[in-house]
Length: 177
Image (cartoon, rainbow, N blue to C red; front, side, top):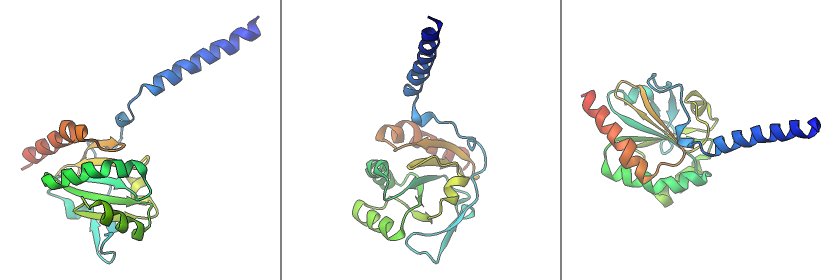
């Protein structure tokens, strides 16, 4: 009888862990980078590969760092939201084209619109690793001092823009003026 009870108890424990995991919000994945300086990068610009953008170029402004790729289905879902955000000109939006081919990324932006002030290339994924990227898309809010204030995992939604991103961006712009 005991040989039937032990597997049943183990199954019940696993079922509880599965149920808890299914109820977690993927946007709530904690990041050890929150309230820490943004990892330093210097990378070629997607549209001008002979020019580079670095974190130092962004000091003194609040900016959104969006990790994306042309092969990413979720990136396609969030792209119209980023295009709308860009129209508001509320924040500088920097794109990190992650593990992608430059030609495919350029074509993708030409056909879907380009919300980025600048998009940089990370073909080998090293910048993404430095930033603790789990997958694409991921979005970070960085303050004027170069400190990460928010990490948003998964596609940005209109609700997230209105309820989370824009209020934080406005607060950071006002605090550090």
